[in-house]
Length: 333
Image (cartoon, rainbow, N blue to C red):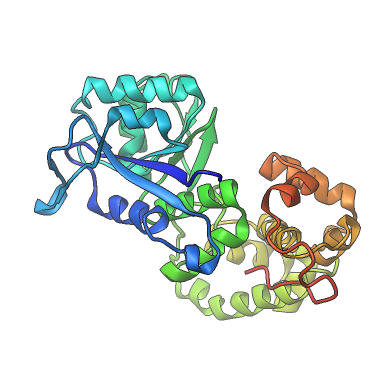
């Protein structure tokens, strides 16, 4: 029998309670009655004494650092103190885990712990937008990406602040277990199931004009989701919104944090993932229903965005091979 997916929540003084709660909600809740995989989450620290967190809260670890050798995924919560060195045994354990090929993720200021361990030297990383300059100043060998929700480099993931940590956790679930599992967890958390890491960390809304266009753009996105199988272009969406292409692109980016073209491609990939998981439709039919036009185009975008082919994705994440074969495409949201 395949073992439960093992996740280590790394605990040390000063970690943020919000991030601990997010990690626990994603991997620490038993949802096997809904067909989701089994997760084995443990709170790992240098010893099993209480760990103080911000706001007078404490966390009681249930494993020591030796358990990291068994983990499939290691997640580091954000921290408020970005200068004080982390415990040396923890930094050594993280270096050893990365050398073994274990996936490591840090939320928000947790990137500073990875930087202290030297794991971000020569690699790309992100943190909360307000901490970007501090990370650059204290760790000049890190290639700090100025604006993203989350990124990966050499099996090390970093995320921006607060909500971006939720996005990264759901993305890690999606990567390991498929889009449908991530969407189910997102629904139970009442949060958005799909935000790509390339979106802006925050969205500027400087004028009432942008707000007035908000409802119109929501209608456009709804229209696009209902017509993904059609060869939609940005010009088509702009015309539907009754705007010039330039004005539409500017307002769309201001409202969503991403460009119309990138958003449309993200939705097509999400739709294709669900079709591959839920149905046994042929690859050309999946590509058609998701709006890629051809299997070749779909395969190229899967390779670029997911680093996996559609066929390999189906083999890894298919849950009901014969289901919905004659039905309509599932809602990609």
